[in-house]
Amino acid sequence: MDVNINSTVMNVTNFSANDNKDILLAICISGWICVAEGILTVIFNGLIIVLLVRRNIKSNMSFLLINLAIADLSVALLHDFPRAVQQHNDWTYGRFLCVFFMYTQDVALFASTFLLVSLSVDRLVALARPLWTGRQKILTRSCMVLIPWITAIYLSTPFLNSGLYRYRGQVWCTPFFAGMYGKVWLPIRSALLVIIPGVVMVLIYGYIAYIIRIRKKNGYIATDSEAPDALRTNQSRALGNAMKRSILITFVVGIAFILCWLPSSLATYTNLISVKSLGGAFYILTALSPLNSLINPIIVLSINHRMFRPRRKTTLPTKLTLTTSLKNLGRSRSAYIYA
Image (cartoon, rainbow, N blue to C red; front, side, top):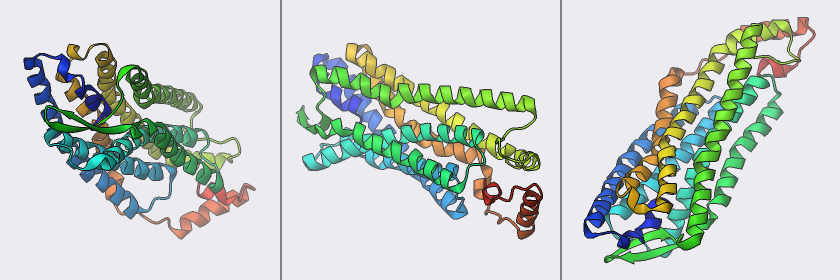
């Protein structure tokens, strides 16, 4: 039930009979693609949520991954499945549910995208300020989750202007983006959903690569100007692999997002010029765009194998040793222990 598909249903009358058959076949195929995407997305994102909750890791990365999995799960439940129903049957659920699904599916898409940006920002903050206090981490975590969801809720308000459209005896649930309004809003939406987040993630990962390169030359990965030298060395050894793994996860997820959504965005811009230039391929491309909601948990599970292992509790001697070292250095702040 993607906006790109439904907003062009009303323009199908501009095609010949053969073109109409090809497009209707493509719409049917896109519906089955959505079914497969939705089922697998629910399975893998549900697995991510269960594993992270079971391990009970109270870190920004885990918290953001849970929220990303929830957003991706919402994409399957509110976007893929309703759209599959729409492609194979009349919309017989009334205007209220039509508006509800059109609005909430866009909220889920925007939230999933913006949470990917939050993940990249979180990795940058973790690399630049690894020894922030607990209060600073909680504040950062809250902002990185609330801002994407609130922004998604606001940017999806145009979809409240949705309703039912009858074409060839079939009732479609579609947003009303006809005329100049559609030509203006659809490119803006595509930019907000794909282009701008993609550019931001590329810039952030470029800066992360720069920081790692500079710090690698200096002989350490994670530092803070207030950290004692002994703790800095221990932290670099302990967190180096974890930091690299988390950065790799967010980087690969960002690349997958760009690869999944870029064809759909280009198809949207091309469609505004001439729908006929893409024909049925347009519907297939837009059906494949939410594929990143399925790929995200697969990437996380593939790279972070420790998610399948029970979490080991930190032993008391280890904590006492670290605390004693800090006191000897005159730095007994508990923030260092749990940084």
